[in-house]
Amino acid sequence: MNGGAAPPSGDASVLNHRRTHQTPTPPPSTSPDPSMAKSFSSSMHYYTEASFMKWTIADAVHVATHHWIPCLFGLSLLFFMAVEYTLFMIPPSSPPFDLGFIATQSLHRALESSPNLNTLLAALNTVFVGMQTSYILWTWLVEGRPRATISALFMFTCRGILGYSTQLPLPQGFLGSGVDFPVGNVSFFLFFSGHVAGSVIASLDMRRMQRWELAWTFDVLNMLQAVRLLGTRGHYTIDLAVGLGAGFLFDSLAGKYEECKRKTTSANGFSSKHALVG
Image (tube, rainbow, N blue to C red; front, side, top):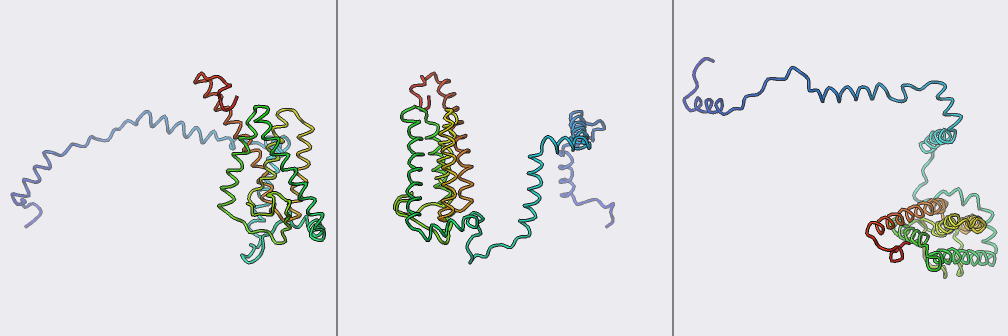
């Protein structure tokens, strides 16, 4: 009944079976793996040679004087972090806070007190939208350059998805008009502004073709259009800002699409005149 007592015969046979079939464990290697040692050495070298460990006062002065725009963005990051973490949130029952609406209060009051002026500006804005559309289609159907048309298709598809996914409330004090676009004062997506994005797409194409006067004309009209949309409360400021960025983004994507199709066409040996993009 002590620790040296032999186990029962059944247990002994099991023990002998385990000992017989157990795979011997190799002794630990005393010499390190050369590949692991090399990896560890290179990683230690990476951290000891980190770029910031070699910075000097002269480097800081050089950055501040030669790269002042990123430095300014860095300061603005800290500023807006402080603003974001200290502001009072807008209650759900209150209308959104929009700085563009505050800046255009006088224009809003003028349009509200003069329906005829509001109708005139709406009609002129609709004409400008027609100019955008006509130019974009002209570049494809007449000049055979589909990039602006592809860009507009990309843009309006994305706008439809985002506009339906998050449907913003109609701003208080919205001044609609029967001659505004969409014509008939029907419903529309607020986010983001297709008016602004379409104008940017057309303007970028004009610059590629060196139609500088026409491009600057469109830029000025686009700016006036944005002010008018804020004055009528037809868009939030964020709709216009994202519309501006969307114009650049989808123009770039359309250019990449064209380049991809050119490479595919060239690889397949097709003639460019049979391709979607020439």
